[in-house]
Structure formats: structure tokens, C-alpha cells
Length: 382
Image 1 (cartoon, rainbow, N blue to C red):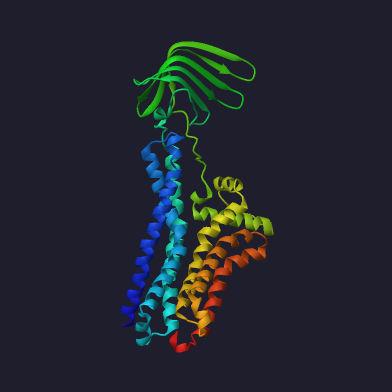
Image 2 (cartoon, rainbow, N blue to C red):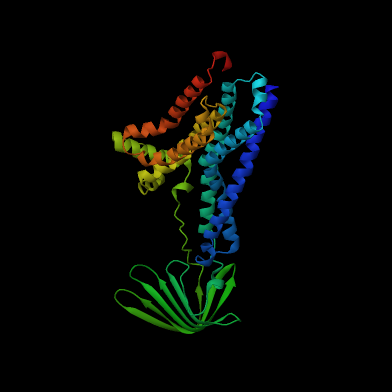
């Protein structure tokens, strides 16, 4: 009988969690998708690239909502059971409150594993795929971004100006400025032109104009009657250098060990040469922040589950009973906020690093001990 009761209870929590998390994730995803429209309007990517990129952000958004939604799910279901007097079913079947709390704690371990799986594997992989796809994609939306009497600079080191853009696709009075390096640039002026596509790559066919190569010391001008200007040589202005959130978890852990050991004990750790350079280009603060988010933050799921479970322990005082639900909700919210701001103190000292690493475990032990006292437990109940 106990298994059936707990099965229904856990299904209610999971059902509410899935509905709430997917709803919140979808809302945030839509808002972010609107912000990412710059990939099309400013960076010249196609709609296919845009939808693929924003879709790969779903795992990241979902992972960030897990802790809060899980807390809300337990809080809501227990409160619902309490209002409908369904908690009496547990007590009438001999289920002690500490056993009820232990069940929620075990359930939270499953959500902890889910978060670690998302944070350490799925999210970095999806973010890396999104960045690689942007990096390798063509600026195939460029023709639709060209408009009359506007400077177009959606790709790096290239500016295009068109005096007139006719309906048949013919461009009149074309000005192109290409920056080759710090000291060299190229200016192209043409009477007419037209964008053509060959082998899935775009070219600008220009007529009756001149090419001026400018350098620090001199300049050289060449006239032409017809020439093709290859647009495929240029990359998007979208940032293609991998961010911390896109790097593999194993790499970030190795980088943190390297920095931590070097700064505190002057020891060196062997890392591959390619990874060594990547580590040197990163800051210790950004590495530790990402590692904290992936590895430490999920463990706060345990403590917020215990806080939500303490909703079943009603205070004896009628005055405190009025504010019991509000107090539980506020305590849970404060713990979630603490999990976010504790990162700011992560690198203050070596002792602070270890303190913040074990802080979730300390909170779980302390709060569980309080629950044992309030439930007047016996060893047989555990």
C-alpha cells in the first residue's frame, strides 16, 4: 500500500514539474529567440540557421529552471494534498513524517542526477554544436539585407554601399570597402552589378569600375569592365570563438586544476599543448564560475527538497501556523538565491573555495537534523 501511495505522490510531482518546466522553458525560449533575430537581420544568416541555432538553446534554458521548478513542484503538490486532506492517507497507513521526508530526499537525488547529466554533458554539447553550426554556415541571407543607400557591414572587414537596388536584382553605383589587415585595404567602385550564386556560394558580378589597393605606403588602381567579387571568403560577424559554456566539462575541470595548483602550491600539471593555450586564454574567475554552475549548483536540489518537504510539519503556535507556508517558500527562495550569490565569494581564499564546495552538503545535514528533531523520530522510522 505504501508503494502505491508514494507512486501516486511522485507521479503528481513529476507531472507538475514537467508541465511547469516545459512551460517556463518555452516562454524563455521564445523571448531569447526574438533576441536572436539579429542573426538574420544583422549577421546575414538564413532562417534555417536561425531556427537550428535557437533550438539548440533549449537544453540550456531547461537546465537553468530545474532547481526552482522542482522546489515549486514539491511545494505545490504537498500544499494541494494538505488542502484536500489527502496527507491523512499517509499517516493513517502508518507512514511516519520522517519516512515521507526521506522519500522526497531520494526523489531529489534523481533530479540531481538529471541536472548533472544536463550540465556536464548535454548543455555543453548542444551549445558547442550551435556555435560550430554558426561558424560553418554561409551568409546566405546577405542578398536580402542589401538595400538602397545604406552601408551594409554584416560580415567582418567588409562594407557595401548601393545607390540603387532595382526589382530585377541589378545594383547601381556600388561601393565596396574591404579591410585586408591593419595596414592594407581594398576599395572597389562599379557602375553596375548583380548578385549571383554558384555552387551554393554568392558572388557579386561587377561591371565598369575600378579596384584600388591601399597600403600604408602607396596605392594602386586597376580598372575593369567585368569582374566577380567572391563573398564566400568572408565570415559572419557573429562571435565564433567558443565561450566557456560551450567547452567540455573535462577540459574545464583540467583548467581549474591547473590554475588552482599553480596559484596555490606552484605545482604544474601536464595538459595537452592545445589545451594549455586555451587555458591560458581564459580567466580563473570564468573557469571557476562555469565549473560551479555545472558541478556544485545542482546539489542545492537536495536542500530545497527538504525545505519544501518541511511543509508537512506544522508549528504548534497558531500565530506561526498562519505564516508557515510563506516562511517555507521564503526560506526555499533564499537558499536558491544563496546558491547563486555564493559564487561571488568562491575565489576569495583557499578556505572559501572548500567552504563553498561543501556548503550544499552542510546545509542538507543541518536541515535534516532539524527535521529529525521536529518529527521526534525513532531509529525504526528511518
